[in-house]
Amino acid sequence: DVKVTQSSRYLVKRTGEKVFLECVQDMDHENMFWYRQDPGLGLRLIYFSYDVKMKEKGDIPEGYSVSREKKERFSLILESASTNQTSMYLCASSPSGWQPQHFGDGTRLSIL
Amino acid sequence: GQQVMQIPQYQHVQEGEDFTTYCNSSTTLSNIQWYKQRPGGHPVFLIQLVKSGEVKKQKRLTFQFGEAKKNSSLHITATQTTDVGTYFCAGPVDSNYQLIWGAGTKLIIKP
Image (cartoon, rainbow over all chains, first blue to last red; front, side):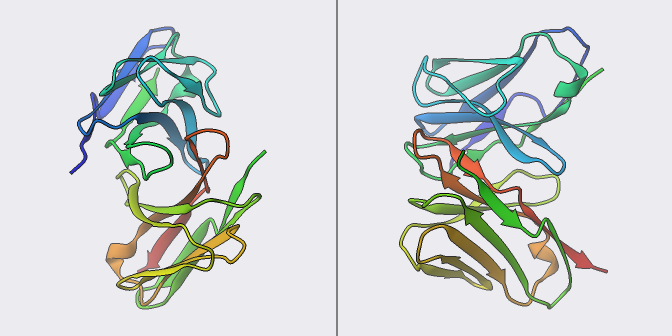
Protein backbone atom coordinates (compact mmCIF):
# COMPACT_ATOMS: atom_id res chain seq x y z
CA ASP A 1 0.00 0.00 0.00
CA VAL A 2 1.13 3.51 -0.78
CA LYS A 3 2.10 5.48 2.27
CA VAL A 4 2.19 9.27 2.23
CA THR A 5 3.36 10.65 5.54
CA GLN A 6 3.04 14.24 6.63
CA SER A 7 5.31 15.30 9.45
CA SER A 8 2.69 16.86 11.72
CA ARG A 9 -1.03 16.35 12.17
CA TYR A 10 -1.49 19.66 13.99
CA LEU A 11 0.80 22.67 14.06
CA VAL A 12 0.51 26.09 15.69
CA LYS A 13 2.83 28.89 14.61
CA ARG A 14 3.04 32.63 14.98
CA THR A 15 2.65 35.34 12.37
CA GLY A 16 5.92 36.06 10.59
CA GLU A 17 7.51 32.68 11.35
CA LYS A 18 9.00 30.55 8.61
CA VAL A 19 7.08 27.28 8.58
CA PHE A 20 8.13 23.98 7.07
CA LEU A 21 5.65 21.20 6.24
CA GLU A 22 7.22 17.92 5.25
CA CYS A 23 5.81 15.10 3.16
CA VAL A 24 7.36 11.72 2.41
CA GLN A 25 6.07 8.97 0.11
CA ASP A 26 7.38 5.43 0.00
CA MET A 27 6.32 4.26 -3.47
CA ASP A 28 8.85 5.92 -5.76
CA HIS A 29 6.17 8.16 -7.25
CA GLU A 30 7.21 10.75 -9.80
CA ASN A 31 4.59 13.38 -8.93
CA MET A 32 3.97 15.11 -5.64
CA PHE A 33 1.46 17.82 -4.79
CA TRP A 34 0.62 20.28 -2.05
CA TYR A 35 -3.00 21.40 -1.58
CA ARG A 36 -4.81 23.50 0.94
CA GLN A 37 -8.38 22.76 1.87
CA ASP A 38 -10.73 25.32 3.33
CA PRO A 39 -14.46 24.89 4.07
CA GLY A 40 -16.54 25.50 0.97
CA LEU A 41 -13.51 25.93 -1.28
CA GLY A 42 -12.58 22.34 -2.00
CA LEU A 43 -8.98 21.43 -2.80
CA ARG A 44 -6.74 24.16 -4.15
CA LEU A 45 -3.35 23.31 -5.58
CA ILE A 46 -0.42 25.29 -4.22
CA TYR A 47 2.55 23.66 -5.97
CA PHE A 48 3.40 20.37 -7.56
CA SER A 49 6.52 18.58 -8.69
CA TYR A 50 6.94 15.96 -11.40
CA ASP A 51 10.60 15.23 -10.76
CA VAL A 52 13.41 15.90 -8.35
CA LYS A 53 14.29 19.60 -8.25
CA MET A 54 11.37 20.39 -10.57
CA LYS A 55 8.41 22.42 -9.41
CA GLU A 56 5.36 24.03 -10.96
CA LYS A 57 3.05 26.66 -9.52
CA GLY A 58 -0.50 25.66 -8.91
CA ASP A 59 -3.50 27.92 -8.46
CA ILE A 60 -2.45 29.69 -5.24
CA PRO A 61 1.36 29.77 -4.92
CA GLU A 62 1.64 33.24 -3.38
CA GLY A 63 3.28 33.19 0.04
CA TYR A 64 4.56 29.63 -0.41
CA SER A 65 7.61 27.90 -1.81
CA VAL A 66 8.55 24.23 -2.17
CA SER A 67 11.60 22.04 -2.23
CA ARG A 68 12.14 18.61 -3.72
CA GLU A 69 15.74 17.55 -3.23
CA LYS A 70 14.95 13.83 -3.08
CA LYS A 71 12.30 11.91 -4.98
CA GLU A 72 10.48 10.76 -1.87
CA ARG A 73 10.29 14.11 -0.07
CA PHE A 74 8.38 17.25 -0.94
CA SER A 75 8.49 20.20 1.45
CA LEU A 76 6.14 23.16 1.61
CA ILE A 77 7.54 26.37 3.05
CA LEU A 78 5.58 29.34 4.31
CA GLU A 79 8.18 32.09 4.02
CA SER A 80 6.52 34.45 6.51
CA ALA A 81 3.37 32.94 7.95
CA SER A 82 0.21 35.02 8.01
CA THR A 83 -3.16 34.37 9.63
CA ASN A 84 -4.83 33.83 6.25
CA GLN A 85 -2.64 30.75 5.81
CA THR A 86 -4.46 28.99 8.63
CA SER A 87 -5.81 25.93 6.87
CA MET A 88 -5.66 22.17 6.34
CA TYR A 89 -2.67 21.26 4.15
CA LEU A 90 -2.75 18.02 2.20
CA CYS A 91 0.16 16.36 0.44
CA ALA A 92 -0.41 13.83 -2.34
CA SER A 93 1.65 11.73 -4.70
CA SER A 94 0.96 9.84 -7.91
CA PRO A 95 3.06 7.44 -9.98
CA SER A 96 3.23 9.51 -13.16
CA GLY A 97 1.12 11.44 -15.58
CA TRP A 98 -2.49 11.68 -14.48
CA GLN A 99 -2.65 8.53 -12.45
CA PRO A 100 -4.69 8.64 -9.23
CA GLN A 101 -3.32 10.57 -6.31
CA HIS A 102 -2.64 9.19 -2.84
CA PHE A 103 -3.02 11.60 0.05
CA GLY A 104 -1.42 11.99 3.44
CA ASP A 105 -3.51 12.52 6.57
CA GLY A 106 -3.09 16.30 6.35
CA THR A 107 -1.61 18.96 8.61
CA ARG A 108 -3.99 21.34 10.30
CA LEU A 109 -1.97 24.53 10.58
CA SER A 110 -3.00 27.45 12.77
CA ILE A 111 -1.21 30.78 12.47
CA LEU A 112 -1.76 33.02 15.49
CA GLY B 1 -9.57 28.61 -17.97
CA GLN B 2 -10.46 24.97 -17.57
CA GLN B 3 -13.14 24.37 -14.92
CA VAL B 4 -14.94 21.45 -13.33
CA MET B 5 -18.30 22.29 -11.77
CA GLN B 6 -19.80 19.88 -9.27
CA ILE B 7 -23.34 19.96 -7.93
CA PRO B 8 -25.00 19.95 -5.52
CA GLN B 9 -22.77 21.33 -2.79
CA TYR B 10 -24.72 19.41 -0.13
CA GLN B 11 -27.28 16.66 -0.19
CA HIS B 12 -29.29 15.61 2.84
CA VAL B 13 -30.86 12.18 2.58
CA GLN B 14 -32.61 9.72 4.84
CA GLU B 15 -30.71 6.51 5.29
CA GLY B 16 -31.86 4.17 2.54
CA GLU B 17 -32.51 6.93 0.00
CA ASP B 18 -30.42 7.40 -3.11
CA PHE B 19 -27.74 10.05 -3.68
CA THR B 20 -26.33 11.53 -6.87
CA THR B 21 -23.59 14.05 -7.56
CA TYR B 22 -22.81 15.53 -10.96
CA CYS B 23 -19.66 16.94 -12.52
CA ASN B 24 -19.44 19.07 -15.62
CA SER B 25 -16.22 20.10 -17.30
CA SER B 26 -15.70 23.10 -19.53
CA THR B 27 -13.46 20.98 -21.77
CA THR B 28 -13.25 17.37 -22.91
CA LEU B 29 -11.46 15.21 -20.38
CA SER B 30 -9.15 12.30 -21.11
CA ASN B 31 -10.34 10.70 -17.90
CA ILE B 32 -12.21 11.54 -14.74
CA GLN B 33 -11.42 10.40 -11.21
CA TRP B 34 -13.65 10.17 -8.16
CA TYR B 35 -12.53 10.47 -4.56
CA LYS B 36 -14.24 10.21 -1.19
CA GLN B 37 -13.26 12.15 1.91
CA ARG B 38 -14.71 10.97 5.22
CA PRO B 39 -15.22 13.60 7.94
CA GLY B 40 -11.83 14.36 9.48
CA GLY B 41 -10.06 12.28 6.84
CA HIS B 42 -8.24 12.76 3.60
CA PRO B 43 -9.46 12.15 0.02
CA VAL B 44 -9.29 8.52 -1.02
CA PHE B 45 -9.34 7.45 -4.65
CA LEU B 46 -12.45 5.50 -5.66
CA ILE B 47 -12.33 5.02 -9.41
CA GLN B 48 -11.12 6.33 -12.76
CA LEU B 49 -13.22 6.42 -15.93
CA VAL B 50 -11.52 6.69 -19.30
CA LYS B 51 -13.86 5.70 -22.11
CA SER B 52 -16.72 7.68 -23.58
CA GLY B 53 -20.03 6.43 -22.15
CA GLU B 54 -18.27 4.23 -19.59
CA VAL B 55 -20.27 2.91 -16.64
CA LYS B 56 -18.60 1.24 -13.67
CA LYS B 57 -20.09 -0.17 -10.50
CA GLN B 58 -18.68 -0.71 -7.05
CA LYS B 59 -21.37 -2.43 -4.98
CA ARG B 60 -24.01 0.30 -4.44
CA LEU B 61 -22.00 2.99 -6.26
CA THR B 62 -22.46 3.59 -9.99
CA PHE B 63 -20.12 5.87 -11.91
CA GLN B 64 -20.81 7.20 -15.38
CA PHE B 65 -18.71 9.13 -17.90
CA GLY B 66 -20.65 11.02 -20.52
CA GLU B 67 -20.52 10.35 -24.24
CA ALA B 68 -18.81 13.67 -24.88
CA LYS B 69 -16.38 13.06 -21.98
CA LYS B 70 -17.36 16.38 -20.43
CA ASN B 71 -19.62 15.18 -17.65
CA SER B 72 -19.77 12.45 -15.08
CA SER B 73 -21.97 11.30 -12.24
CA LEU B 74 -21.78 9.19 -9.12
CA HIS B 75 -24.96 7.53 -7.90
CA ILE B 76 -25.28 5.72 -4.59
CA THR B 77 -28.24 3.39 -4.13
CA ALA B 78 -29.80 2.98 -0.69
CA THR B 79 -27.35 5.11 1.27
CA GLN B 80 -25.86 3.85 4.52
CA THR B 81 -24.17 5.74 7.34
CA THR B 82 -20.82 4.55 6.05
CA ASP B 83 -21.41 6.59 2.88
CA VAL B 84 -21.25 9.88 4.78
CA GLY B 85 -18.51 12.21 3.51
CA THR B 86 -17.62 14.50 0.67
CA TYR B 87 -17.33 13.16 -2.87
CA PHE B 88 -14.99 14.89 -5.30
CA CYS B 89 -14.54 14.53 -9.02
CA ALA B 90 -11.27 15.52 -10.66
CA GLY B 91 -10.08 15.73 -14.24
CA PRO B 92 -6.63 16.25 -15.75
CA VAL B 93 -5.43 19.64 -16.89
CA ASP B 94 -4.41 19.49 -20.54
CA SER B 95 -1.01 21.09 -20.20
CA ASN B 96 0.54 19.41 -17.18
CA TYR B 97 0.12 16.69 -14.60
CA GLN B 98 -2.19 18.40 -12.19
CA LEU B 99 -5.85 17.59 -11.64
CA ILE B 100 -8.61 20.15 -11.61
CA TRP B 101 -11.04 19.38 -8.82
CA GLY B 102 -14.74 19.84 -8.41
CA ALA B 103 -15.79 21.60 -5.21
CA GLY B 104 -17.22 18.40 -3.79
CA THR B 105 -20.67 17.21 -2.75
CA LYS B 106 -21.19 16.56 0.93
CA LEU B 107 -23.49 13.65 1.69
CA ILE B 108 -25.33 14.09 4.96
CA ILE B 109 -27.58 11.42 6.44
CA LYS B 110 -30.55 12.91 8.28
CA PRO B 111 -30.95 11.59 11.83
